[in-house]
Length: 311
Image (tube, rainbow, N blue to C red; front, side, top):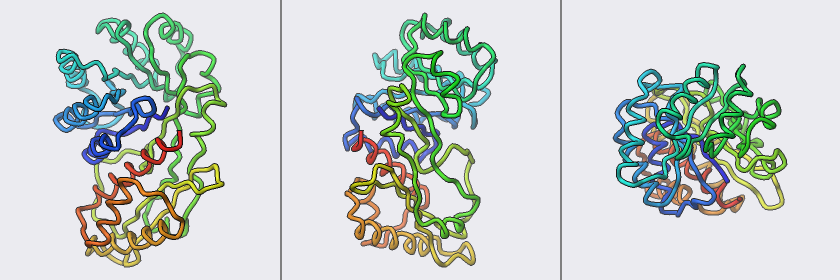
């Protein structure tokens, strides 16, 4: 199974919604969504579409970033709203980074009845109360323990139903830095996770774990595309960067410069079509530009569809 980890920003949520028609396979794909906006209307819409497609979602109830970092109640309210409608596909999921997170999770899970209905944990760090939390998960209905790869060795004996979480995206400080990195190895987690005694794997797609509210005008536009070639076990990633990068003017022109390189690459390498690649090709043929958020959305969509086809 594959658990794509997404922050609940506009285009990440739209990416999941637009993939439901693929269709997403509920036996293979279970997204993890970390809400970051206090206004949960876009999140509610995405969850409705996903639940209609029988896709379970692990919804983070104690986000690390964004507007809901302090006030978590809107997330619990949203989960209850769906349960009142008889929708049980939303799995309350807790980030575990500190002892305080662990204590909050155990108390909240028992108070809200998730110990019987089911919950999940995402372990971003080792805590001091590892044994206590381990015992708690084994005596309650813990569905998944997603563990950040650096902590997997120390925690794998403590938790059942383990999931490998990796950040495989080589994030650069400037888009122009990708000019020197035309392509590179992204991951082989889709092959390796069973060897780590895990039932699934998770990643941050072509975005990476870093979180920002939003950026200013771009000097350069970069498009990131994961792919796998016949005979090569590794998933690789290619970076396509605009050439007119002296100022921030004309982002559409920058996009089409990068997009042209992407289309030529896809054709030369015979990369299989995906929903996202068809849309990239339509943009190129019609010279249509809808903003850089759409570019990010399509990159995410392509990666998730690629992974679903490999597992």
